[in-house]
Amino acid sequence: MIHESLRIIREEHTSLSAMLQSLIQMVRRGPMHDGQDDAAAYFDVLRAMLFYIDEFPEQHHHPKESTLLFPRVAKAAPHTLSVIDQLERDHAQGESRVRQLMHRLLAWELLGESRRQAFVDDVTDYVDFYLEHMRLEETVVLPEAERHMSEADWQALDTAFAANPDPLNQRLPRDPLFDRLFTRIVMTAPSPVGLG
Ligand SMILES: [Fe+2]
Ligand SMILES: [Fe+2]
Image (cartoon, rainbow, N blue to C red; front, side, top):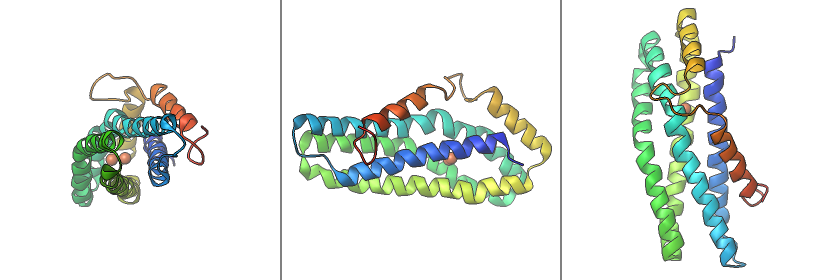
């Protein structure tokens, strides 16, 4: 049986992975050198991608995991506790890491090539870190949840996901802001990453 809450978590992972992969492709490709405008557009797209990667998990994805899913999994399957601890630590440091990426991107854009490598290294580490984070969730936490949570747990979880997409505070539900931002980034990113 497919639980609605897990379907949502996996779908959000798919969006995030797509954005992380596009980001790393853009960074590897680097700016085109046919003019000032192209460089400016390149940095605009990278900034929009970093904004998405910062804002979407912080506002929508991590709260659902940390407040709704993880506590239930930890209770039903206590042997997952150390993994859940690790995932919570990841959530806690994600925000400051993306802020640092934003800063290093600005340094590259405004100060030039000498600051490029620091950004490239940092963004590569971050993408690896976040992909590994999602891999742990998908290979340990979600399967253990499916194995050990009771029908009553699932009903409560699915209801909580449906009733309030953001349990921490009544911010906007996922639709349609982030989907629109996602589409806009894909439309403006140059091929082969996007359609621009
Ligand atoms: Fe997570
Ligand atoms: Fe996640």
